Length: 251
Image 1 (cartoon, helix red, strand yellow):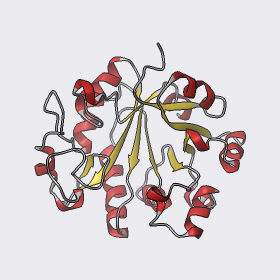
Image 2 (spheres, one colour):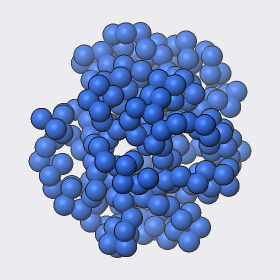
Image 3 (cartoon, one colour):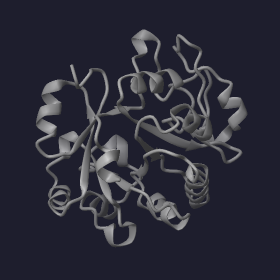
Image 4 (cartoon, helix red, strand yellow):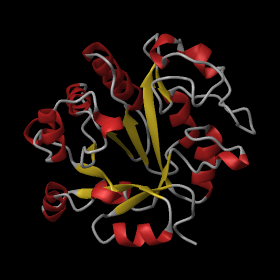
């Protein structure tokens, strides 16, 4: 299953292009990826009423005309809110609608976004797993948060499950973590608990010792976010597949 899941370049949040009115994590971006046969990476957040919705940020400001947390709005309201700049008037999709759109045509790598509390972590994992139970296509879950991987397994998901990682030296990304937590995540020391089956690593950090070791041991490594051909070539010396945006890796 892993070989097939990573057989094609992976479109980061779909094949989006804001200048052309195609917004990340939108139905139009996913349609564009499927037209080229690319795999799709997307993100799931949890709404106020506990619905996993395809949306990257934990707040509304960057992607919609509203402000406030995603956890503070119900799925129906967010699902009726156009994505800012969308030429087609795309609105965020609930996870089941996204699965219906793709319908097994290309592989899916679904990132579960870290939640602010353990209740949200458990709810996002359990509901995403339940919604994907009958999905007839290639699908793997991934997360930066080891607790989400544990929750996905406890919810009964037996498919590919990956950890997203990087060097944890970007202060604006990881200020909420302690030095010890950053060390554990950088060196993948949670593996005895999470038992991740693939790695998604920032291309700048693809030579981290534990990433290289895991790949030598047979784990698939995907790398993000690749934005040009030169970076793709250098990244693929150390990874099995790229997550890309802003260019076509096959032209």
